[in-house]
Image (tube, rainbow, N blue to C red; front, side):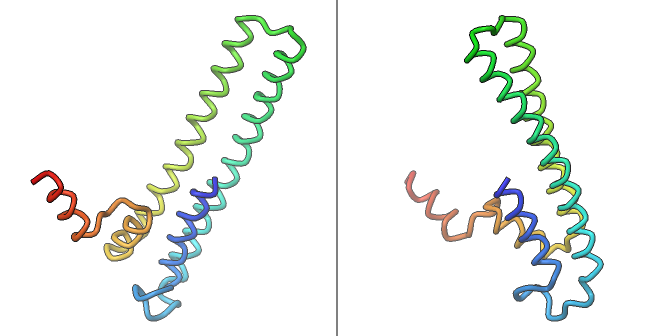
Amino acid sequence: MVYVVRSLAVAAALAAGTGSLAAQESPYADQRAHLMRIFESMRGEAVLLGKRILALERELDSLFASGTIQRDRLGAVTGEIGRLQGTLRAVHLAAHLETTALLHVQQIRLYHEIRGYVVADHEHHRSHRQYE
């Protein structure tokens, strides 16, 4: 979750004109507001999903601790935990898709670089040299 918050905070900072990408804040006010709505929506969904996952984990722990766990209940609870974890991941990644759709080309490049998607040219070339 911390990674999600950091990534979306980076996007919001880009939209706010922080750094060298934008000299003025005002042209980016709508963009920043939209990014914050994406973040808040994602956060709300993520918190609800997280609470459901934690409740199921507590149930699972309780069933094991009491010795009352049955194979069918084990499958049902762990299956639901897995489904919810997948949904949580999709919510997170969908927010990144929405975020990228709002950014300008330069902002996207910086966003990807900050998130680690882009390898600097000197690192890219160095990695090829190790095989020579």
